[in-house]
Image 1 (tube, rainbow, N blue to C red):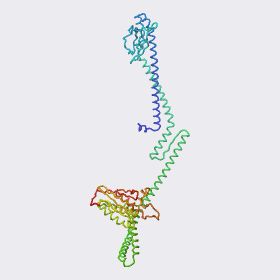
Image 2 (image 1 turned 90 degrees about the vertical axis):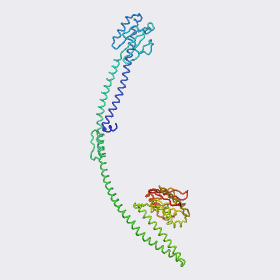
Image 3 (image 1 turned 135 degrees about the horizontal axis):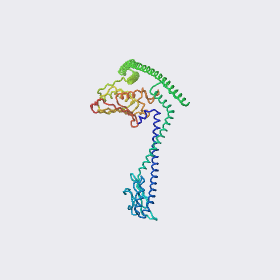
Image 4 (image 1 turned 45 degrees about the horizontal axis):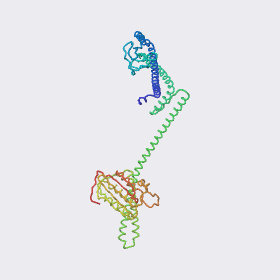
Length: 496
């Protein structure tokens, strides 16, 4: 019904609404008139025949007092000369028939007390009874059976006449309303048609309205608005084209920058790591030579300098490796290579690399987990573990660091727990951001470049795992890494 109504334009919908309202009002008015006229006709007719029955009782009284059967028959025969009277009868005091124009017993009297006027209604006729009194005493009653056909005919005629009058009047009102509405709905219909055309992507169409000066002013304002809309659309389309060209140029520049970035990364890898490796090799040789000759000459201070330089060289190497790894992750060029690997061996290797930092901060380390092999990417897992344990050693002084792990056929869970300074709750969401540290000042207590946790987080995501941080019983921090084991491959070797 709603979709059918929407198919019409504004004027048609308005006319339908007015027509419906007039129809409803007309039906209501016809109903009210029918009820009122029916009640009036009913009351008038029934009261007329009640009075007629009383007149009949007065006419029949002499015959009943004199017990003149002939006079009674004459009275009832005179009564039925009226075409509406079907039966007239006179009864004695004990309701025995005295005189009648036909067969009696048609009236369904509810009460047999005929001392008062009575009236009952059957399907096609009415029954009236009036008492006959002589010198104040009840001596009998009369009965009239009257057809209600004339009454029903009058009611139907009144209903038909009122319906025709109201229908004609309603059509006249509808015609006048439609004529008047056409003058002001045509303006809205024209504007709606133009808006629909514009909404479907059309351009150049304008509204043409006629009428009073107000309507002409509306036409001017409406068409000016459409002119501005089309002008703004043209400006917007041109702006979109310009922005698209700029984005295209920027995209091409970004692609070129990525190529350049890759070249820079390769240059850093070659031009910085190669001499750095050579420097480390030479310094390691010098350190060994000094260790052999330390007792022959006073070269301890030289050895100390070399050891410090070697430590800084290793730190620089680790920083360069992390920067390069971060670049590979951002460029999405780090490819996972899964194989069976011994998790305890990987952890031992990572702890061995972080041993100088652990010794410098006088930390104790412990392991808890089974000696097992899992199906994983050894390089990625090594980077995750070395960054977590290095972070724990750096922020813990004279404390304990524990590495725990457990694995089943579906996933591996690894935890690095420390008793260090901890991480403020408001900063726990920031620690995985690249280059972010709690203390960003140049004179900060803890060094580092802020890439370790970011790299660990990116690698965990790449392996479809998750990493989170939580307090360690109010002192220190617990990093928890959960990684899936592809193909569900886990081999238990021996108890750790």
